[in-house]
Image (tube, rainbow, N blue to C red):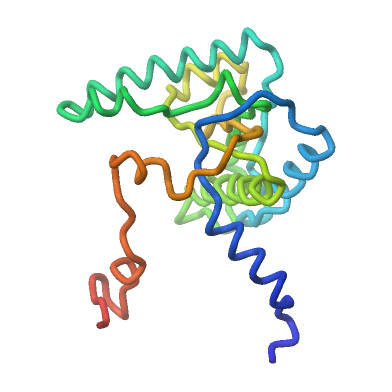
Length: 217
């Protein structure tokens, strides 16, 4: 028996929260308990980061006018995305892609400025700062699910416009608008699968052995 392993119930809980995490778009009224929000942000802050650079920054949006401005940015990009999707544009426009106006808490996750000074782990892979922020977002997402709260990651926005709206410094970059709040229920499967937009690929198709594309039977 591995002495470092968690107990069976704890392991089951971890795998369950991973399996039941959903990208939520539908929220019900209700504020997020400030104590819970602090726990969630602490979980995000415990994410791994290359060279311990901790490049994540979170902007909490509490101004109703600013929330509406973010929603308008997303709507503008939703229309542009529909045009780019050509024959699937009308289908895309019928999808609910965000819950900015309904969610209890609204956060913007961003890359900090002055990242060029961090070389450790980034000399050949400078995008590792982005992966570090993604890990923080995932921590927040899983912790939210464990707390019974839904979270949705919105990426439909122009990053330059959003950065200007938030008065972000040169060199920083918004990565995600995060909708967080109470939900009536969690989707039984990814929403895009439920509405027929896309389907998941099985893990066996995505694990290669020794060389790219080699799938063992």
